Image (cartoon, rainbow, N blue to C red; front, side):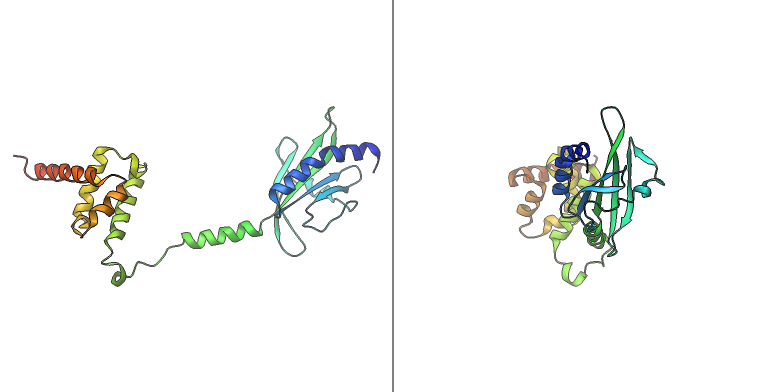
Length: 215
């Protein structure tokens, strides 16, 4: 490695080190010299390559730039079968001349496993056994409140007074408020005090009565 190349590698070394530390242990970072097609620096070598080994940069010839002097992400594989997502960038000097090539190769194994776990959680589940949950009125409470705030698109503590009245009406119609000691639980679910809940409940019942008897 000549002195000019060594100086350039030393200048870029903190960049390679920083990226490798950020993505450790899931990525390797490699600096290639296209002029010699050799690896001139490598951090966290997942591929077991060493400085001085062939770069095989010909693999970039069939790729299309995805940004200025940037290629990828594109798929690669390790000898043990692990799949990688790779991105390469051509680094130019002040005169615009292409110099070294920086490659970041990310091992997808951990991320794919996490994806499988999340997909399993998101998969359809069997219906709740009625024998176990038919007496659990808090399930009904949680479902009604959750559906309501999702429909409104705001968290429960930001519901308007009109929204709270409507929601309390739904809870009463579903039989939630007829359960013993339901008021503290419902007030907590709505993030209001008990006194505020009783006031809203009274107003909701008045409105329901007025609607039932418009005269």
